[in-house]
Amino acid sequence: MLTIPGRRGRLCDCRTRREFLTAGSVSLFGLSLAPFLAWQKAQAAAAPRLAGMKGFGAAKSVILCFLQGGPSHLDIWDPKPEAPSNIRGEFKAIQTKVPGIWLSETMPMLGEQVDKCTLIRSMSYTPEGLFNHTAAIYQMLTGYPPDKVSPSGQLEPPSPADFPTAGSHISKLKPPTEPVLPFVELPRTLQESGVIGKGGAAGFLGKAYDPYRLYQDPNKPIKLDDLTLRKEVPPERLKDRFLLRKGLNSSMPDLEKALKSYALDEYYEKAFDLVLSGKARDAFDLEKEPDKVRERYGRTTFGQGALMARRLIEAGTRFVQLNWPAVANGNPEVDSWDTHAANFKPLKNLHCPVLDRTLSALLEDMHQRGLLQETLVVAVGEFGRSPRLGVSTSGNTNAPDGRDHWPYCYTALIAGAGISGGKLYGASDQTGSSPKENPVHPTDLLATVYYTLGIDPDMEIRNHLNQPRELVKGKPLVGLWS
Image (cartoon, rainbow, N blue to C red; front, top):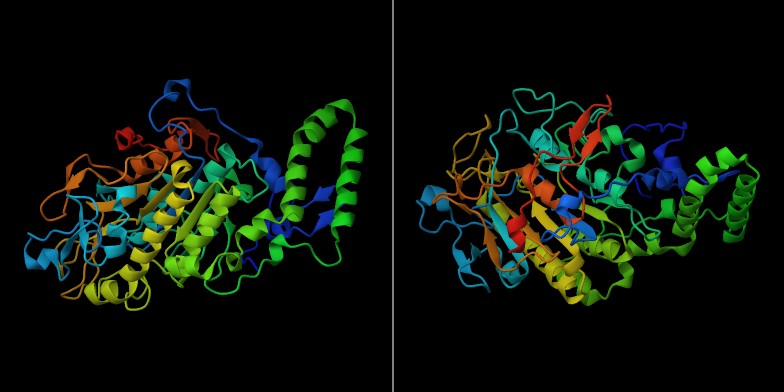
């Protein structure tokens, strides 16, 4: 079953979101999934001032590989072989396929695909309370710093007053044209300690724009009960009830018909198609992929999650968020990028082999299928790790070979949608401590995502208090298309 952890939130018509996503559940007036799709009607036209600019509207969809936990930029994307040993660490730098671009020896397979992406080596922000994972994740995914941050950086649980995560805005402003789910998050929630899902929900947009959460391991058999008709509801019966609803609409007074029938029929039809076409359900079915392809991505949770993301995008889903399958502040010896206690052994033996295989496979596969041209692929964490080993930068205790949180400089990978491949954008200084040129704030990266989808990052939205706000306080990186 597609599980949705946490409290059973109620929607405005007193139905739970699970009831909305139980596609076999029907009522006299149609599918219970239909209102979820109907609320996608709100759209925003891009500002004419952006029309014709390089990269604007170049993407139809986005895959965000969110590496929650904060991977070390120096040990993956931005090695410093000339730095002192207490900064450069244990790994050697290797030459990639593109002359002049060097990666850590932990990423040899990505080195063969680096001609398809750009590395932004100047991601940076000043903490101001955003030193810990949850607060940094919230800023990265919503484009706004949280209102309340404790000295430790811990936040309150998700709230209806939160700023929406990027995928929620996109599923509202750019609903898909196919009968598929607009926004899917997998394979686990965002989490630091007991704070679960902060920065990963629709917030003041309402639960209708929450992601469809596949919190299962894609490397294991997937249960798809929520996208399957119940046995007692055959397709013919579902069609009859759909036609009955249309008949009832036709007998409404003209005004009510104008407000309901005309506007909603399109979405009831999409809901009907979503259930009966099986397109969304099929997108989750990795058994339809050849073993060779599955092996190329890696038989891991993250690897099979990336393959599932590609299938969802291919089916028409607008935004897929693939979270690193670990708690942000988990155990680095098992699954986490949070390498305070140990940095090099977990990266060498566990995390980097998975990341290297999966990202290289995703770029290669998307390119070969012609999907990369119209899909934006982003891989980024909430921050990097401290250049100097064994020091404390966030109040945490670090082992001699551990690295602490470091928001002042880190790296993001971006590809697709016509962005130049085999390039570097920005640069870090000699120790990877701060940007040397073209600093990029997380909100600038998020603005670039919106921009690439044809959404004006400066457009006005209204929060839960009906106050005007910018979609994101950042500027798109138009230089990526030069």
